[in-house]
Amino acid sequence: MLLTGVSTTDSYLQFITVLLLFVFVLVITYATTKWISGYQKNKAVYGNLELVETLRIANNKYIQIVRVGKKYLAIAVGKDEVHMLSELEQDDLTFYDSQTKELDFGSILEKFKKQNGKEHD
Image (cartoon, rainbow, N blue to C red):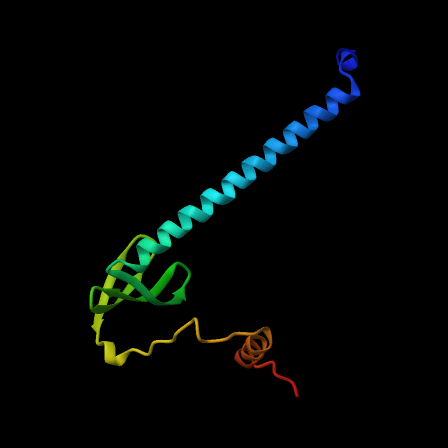
């Protein structure tokens, strides 16, 4: 048998080494992912483009409100194409601050029940 020359201690050391290398790779991957997401988020916040709102109208078809500089545009986004629908006035839009709006599971569940007409009292 080929493995008879390997002692039990050597097997445990190999296993621990492989396990530590695996954990090291996971930590490096996690740190890199966090760094890249933070970098992309900062680039998006300080740019001239911002996605304000998205509404799905069909499979792979969306209507989006996009801020470009100081203008707001309504665009239709499909699988392979993007079309501008119209330019919107800022006064016509309603903005919601997602940080101040507090969501809890109960309110989300009640909203879901009302939308599906399954509210039973």
